[in-house]
Amino acid sequence: MGAEGRRCGHGRAARVVALLVCAGFVLAGCASMPDSGDVEQVRATKGADSQVRVYAVPPRDGAGPQEIVDGFLEAMTSDDPSYATARKYLTKQWTGTWRPESLTTVLTEAPESSAPSGLEEADELTYALSGELIATVDRHAYESVAPAQYDGALRLVRESTGDGKDREWRIDAAPQGLVLGESDFLRNHLSVNKYYWVSGQNTVVADPVYIRQRQDPMTGMDPVAQAVSALFEGPARWLAPVVDSPLPAGAGLRKGTTSLTPDDQGELRVPLNDEASNVGGTLCKRTATQLLLTLRELSAPRVEQVKLQRADGSPLCVLTADQADAYALERLSPGSHVYFVDSDHRMAVVATKPKTVDETEVRGPFGDGQLKIDTVAVARDLHRAAAVSQDGRSLYAASIVSDELLAAPLARSNAIRPTDRFSAPSWDGNDLWVADRDPAGPRLLRFDGGKGPARPVEVEGLDGARIESLRVSADGVRMALLLSQDGRSTLQVGRVERHTDADGTTTVSVVELRAAAPRLESVSALSWAGPSRLVVVGKETGGVQQVRYVQTDGSLTPAGGLPGLNKVAAVAATEDEEQLLVAVSDDGLVRLMPNANWQTMVEKGTWPVYPG
Picture (cartoon, rainbow, N blue to C red):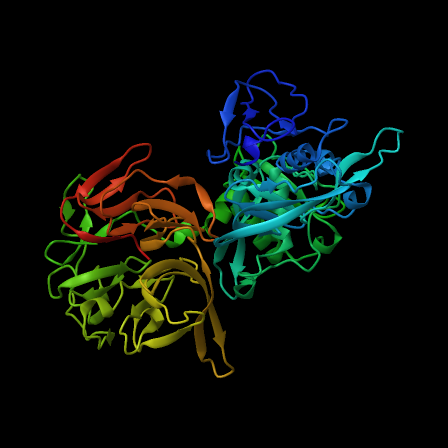
């Protein structure tokens, strides 16, 4: 049972929680309480509800060691400023040592505590903490791990209160940081995409972080100020090698800024410190672009304009939301057409009328039947496409907006079995990518501008795993890889690095693979479905096939699981979250309408794709 399942006093039971619409309750002896609303029993395994507020309550006089342990673990889940109430469960010495902001450890459920023997006579006790570790959060960055055993400890001693009363049990040693169950973590935190400029390019990339949904207990900042501060702190370590930050070291908000709110016209004034006060106009506007893209999914109402101010309050630069939106990732994936492979193995487009095909949209050898194809990918300029032949042996590129003869293939696979040949191709903003799955010589290939020759790309950390499929993000610096090894398939995200030598030769590699869906035992299909979000088809251990959204950092998204669908073979989405999710199932090509169930688009067809 999690934090929501502890009793008041000794032992455990359900915490009473409430929505914010009714009067509050006072629960004597509990470590935390709701602020208002209808009473509802909630277990840790229930989905997080951001409307639920938890208030920490200090230990009562004469509280036993189990009450102290339960109370402290509960108090860590609250919004109490500086965790002042949680510190009341600690000894005077440990109060100054404990740093709740240093790290957050996330478990599937809140930690279980195991009482030692000798509760009555001992003056010192150690309670073991246990649970299933799924992630850590450091400097707002969420890092998921394959579920593993968590082991921690709380050491309790009897300490004099200094008021002449009997000595009270207090915690003299505890894990640094917070230890939370997943539902408590998601109730208190919100995932936000920060944006940074890709090195040497005029393109941004999303860097997801978690901030507090309400005021941060340690800094006192509201969510907008937290997001701006996190942006100034710089990108996550994993992303840092491929992005630029336009501001000098030490740049940030003016000291003492804890709240940022747009005015009635939607203008947000952002006061900067001395280190950021004298940057040039170009750097200032690039920073303002990052701020507006970061805040557009957070602020309500929408920030229409941002004004950066020097430390003395004078204006530094102004930028509108429309100007910043020109760099949004969904702009790199234009068009709403859903392309697919029809029953005659030609490339086609789903028409606007349900269950019909637009036979005029795809021209050239992929649409006129010159080549029978298996999988396709459309360039983001909507002019060209790449296709793998029906037998999986050859990769071609051709125009889809003009008539032309089929050219020679860009590459051929020598694998004996079709399933060991080329994967489906994928485009970034310029280049074409494909994996050759030949057991005798597996390789990842890149084609500059979608043209030959093939350029092999090294992938670090494969350790014998085979690339089954891949999807490159619109920004070109992240690659989602479906890997297979020892009968198991996993989803990994790698960083795409480009290094140019003095002679102008560019070497590209994919490095630092990290798990994006560590709790899924197998993954069979994937697609980008947002700036830092993927849609995947997979199974949990002992579970059934499901379609769900996951963040690139491995955390769950608010959308979570999607309506059930039978035997899903492929999914298609785009960085523009407004576009509909499309899949192939027993019912043909289907799409998921907002607030509805799956609907059939085309009864016969395979491999649906958006540009990319």
